[in-house]
Amino acid sequence: MSKTIIDAAQVEQHNATQRAALQADYDALGGMLSRRGVDIDALTAKAQGFAVAVPSWGVGTGGTRFARFPGMGEPRDVTEKLEDCAVIHQLTRATPTVSLHFPWDKPADPKALRQQADSLGLGFDAVNSNTFQDQAGQAHSYKYGSLTAQSQAAREQAVAHNIECIELGKTLGSKGLTVWVGDGANFPGQHNLRGALERYLDSAKGIYAALPADWLMYIEHKLFEPAFYCTVIADWGTSFAVAQQLGEKAKCLVDLGHHAPNTNIEMIVARLAQFGKLGGFHFNDSKYGDDDLDSGSIDPFQLFLVFNELADAAQRDGAAFNPAYMLDQSHNVTDPIESLMSSAVEVQRAFVQAALVDRAALAGFQADNDALQSAQTLKKAFRTDVSPILAMARLRAGGAIDPVAAYRASGYRNQVAVKRPPKAGASGSGIV
Ligand SMILES: [Mn+2]
Image (cartoon, rainbow, N blue to C red; front, side, top):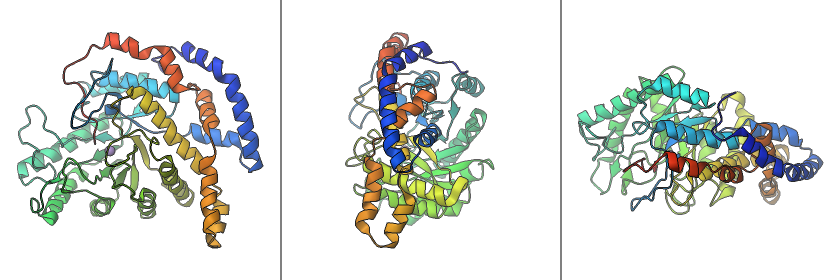
């Protein structure tokens, strides 16, 4: 049994106050679902199998281009970040892995970090490289690009950093590298559009060549920012072309916030899945642009529709379909632990709702061109409040019935505020 950060007896005490109400809600929902031919316990077991990785940068307060307002007791280094991630997993039981970001999280001793993670019952998901800002003592600036820079020395430095990330990840037990570049242009004419992508491909091939056989390279696209006229990897089409050029181990990563408003993201998901290039997700939400809001906070129906496509792909492709799920959010006005717990639950909710879609009925309505009933079939699943299933999944796995309430009752934030006095300039922006 791994070490728990919050006293297990405290969580048990919290659960004891809510257990009877949960059981009543669960039984009522179970009765309703059984009339639809759905076994609630099978669905709860499925929910227990769901996992989404927590980004190490998410446990610190994010910020915007204008300001960052740090919170109390923010983690000051990667070991403290892991402690916060362990709290999230202890209470939600849905976040067993952490996605690290180098060099922000570069450990002095990678083996010791892996041991710490083991002792907390955590593993490591994909590692993220960072060539969108300069580090102290860096020989070549990324001001005008990294993997696509005109300067060959800057490109080589960016490739070497990505390879270093792979090496660190190998020691940590990670199996993937996520590559996002901020490279782009702010003026028409600043870049030769084709030339920039040619340089990107050349650099990316250098990274891909260093990838272990059982690793994946996730190519993350982003419409804009920090470049505002054009971004080199701006859309899923470019991402797909790059992944095709690189090879089998290169896949596309869909960050929900990295699209223009009203983009049909679920269709992008369906296309990438169809052609075997859907590598994974960065979950978050957005209203206007890339603002990294909490998952499911703006458009939970879109999140559901994304998971509906994932459920379809899983049914078609079986175990071969195994995309990586990660959160990627920026928390500016909430306690990051609370936001990450709530978001993990929202993503898990969409996963369970999508499992409720009557696929045989849907296929029948589609075959009959019954648009209204097709849409209603999806809505029926989406409108089902699966909260008791999520809470029961947590309870059965040793988590908290209400993670935010249990967290607040534990007093964790106040405890770490004492142990972790503020450090000047701590934490990255979290905007990727
Ligand atoms: Mn992202």
